[in-house]
Length: 120
Image (cartoon, rainbow, N blue to C red; front, side):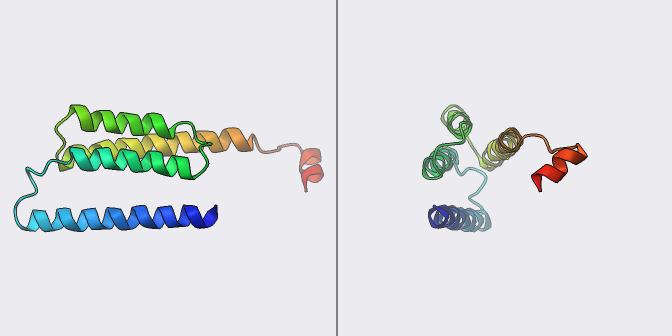
């Protein structure tokens, strides 16, 4: 499972770098202001769902966030600003929800001295 997760992270990083270089090249040529990014935003929402499926589907908030990103891609004409804004908001929400899941899973830290001695 760790190898699969590492491969997915590397694959998504490389795909993001390739997309970034392509968009950078378009910007150098002066074509970036009108480049529609709806397809890239929808594709990135799909990759988020694929990542969720690959890690075991134990994180319930990934599909709704990917759905919201896809909804933005489907309803709004996306340019670079909209693309980055949608992913910025999605990453903030994902981070907060991941933190909430981690806190609920781990529970509160023991504060009593007897509890500390009993746990280790």
